[in-house]
Length: 605
Image 1: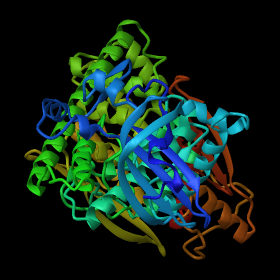
Image 2: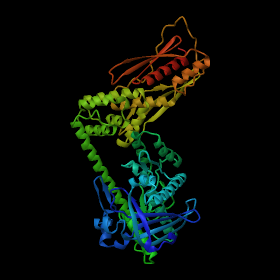
Image 3: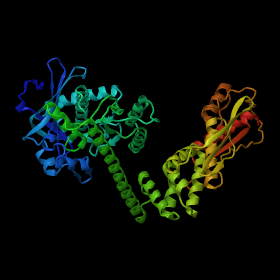
Image 4: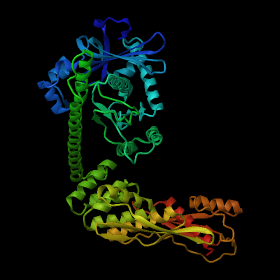
């Protein structure tokens, strides 16, 4: 044991927790070694001294598995007289601890790990929110220590990220990642630095304990985390997390959902399976024995080992405990999900009754949509109007819910038709709806028949899509486009209308030729094909004109329909030819008109 010559009865540390925390089970201390490395001591309450195996308290903790936290308090794993009192590391009080003593080299690699059961006294109880103020106040008693710890943990974080851990922190917005790489936002953004300090030192201690247990052949509960088969390469996952630094806060939930879908739930087990989120071979939980039963079991094992006593748990017992904890976590998460879902439904019902639908944000509007669909009635006028007003910017999940689950009713049918018309202007949305249908309706993705033909010497693609739902097969009409992807997207939109039994939206490009004028430009792409059909049609047409030294096409717009559902008609004039495109957005209408003009040039009509 190192402890830099400090007398064991003088062992000291500080605690850093959330401002409301009363069950403080870990304290920290950091020093610089003579060779420029680091000496880290993480002291954890000696809970196993008070809660031995098979005691009444042990059975009580096992039944609860963990402390559960709520908006206005918590339900502790151990009785409060222990969790918040006798075991908690309150400042100025001597407490028994298991100290994890770690020596780091200059490059932050672990040189040595020692374990000792001893007594410590906390010098200060700090909150996460105190850390920024202490760092900026050189006169604060804890300034030098917190500055040193902050320097070390910044290095640990950078090292973990360079080694591929799914770690991201945004101090400005209070965004942090868990050990598994899932994203959460702290309630107070000023907590971020303190949160990072504690998380980095706890990960270091847990990793050191896992390696210690492996080297000394001590059966413990390892914390394992695996990725799903659909998970992309780690490099792409890291880029996804890094993208959060540049995206608006309203889109953070989408990133959080995406990462959640990619990764499996972390679990406990008696054997090492690796930790994907941390990118570690072996990892465990040891630093929260007041709050987590897995940590308490590991304390019982490690404590017995360093006291040279028989280990309380066999490997078979560790397996049984792991299965019990994993199952309870699933049950608790399911119960929490149901509670949050019902709470959200009640809030949505209040919004409906209070006529606050139009002002709802996207998340609340989605909940309102689910409530109305669940009622099985036709949608109310207020929802109908609010839906149409936000149609152009409607989250695709709401579109999917209405198209796939809305009951029969005149208003619901009108909304479905409006959605199909909107999808006609952006057929890629139809593919997204089918993706949603996989999750909420159990559909398979459509299959496509695509044929390639040639107009002059430029390719054109025709696509038909089909899907089987139950014992019935649905097929779309044939749709043609200059790109394979475009043809498939249009076929998807047509298939969606077929499934719903509604008229297919107008996905055809309308081409109109005006009479030849005196000033005529002779263009025939079939004789001189230089149009790149793989590019955006507006740009491709402009590029063609520049290459041929021809006047650029002119675009004009007309608008009709209601202000909340405008229809733009764009006319593209190029020499003696005109073509039009119609859509709910000006740029989309312009793109359709340009694409229609390219058809005119390709076919020579």
